[in-house]
Length: 199
Image 1: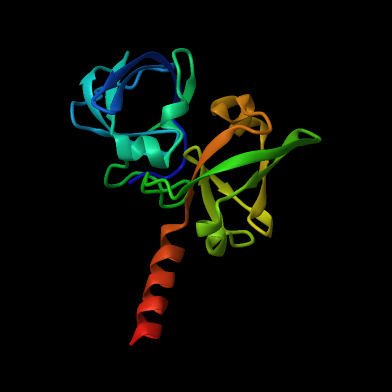
Image 2: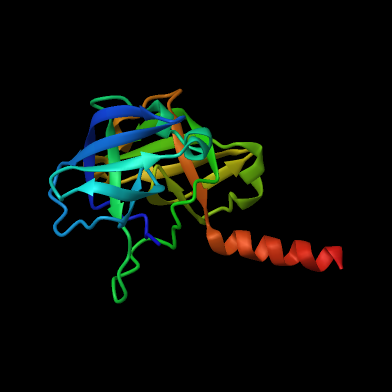
């Protein structure tokens, strides 16, 4: 489980094809101490397992299923990614509950400066439209954000200077694809209500 508070970014050093999937070698900008084999780590919001390496660089294996459902297949040597290690018991929940299970791939529609802030407008796939709730939470490339201006599968977020400095969202341009994970609490409520309606 994650919070959507990015701990550092990393750069993809190598992309190797493996039986329909890929193996990524990633070098974090800031060292991740005591990174362990088998540890969960979110790359651009997609939960992956560390298969080798250390805090200086590490590898993850991306399955064909993950390639189909996320932007992991877009990554190339030199690509920057957001990195977040999984929560430990007692950690602060600074963002919101994020599972690292990408619900859909959206698109950057527009980027508009507003003083020191920057407004990003995204489009989302239709399957997740019901979860785009005004002033609710969403993870965009693993970053916990508050959405507003929700209409017809589009929503806006306001990025503060810190988020622009500490994540890869400042690299995005209109037309770029992004990973989206909606609020898991909303998904559970919707599933519960759907089960009740089917009785």
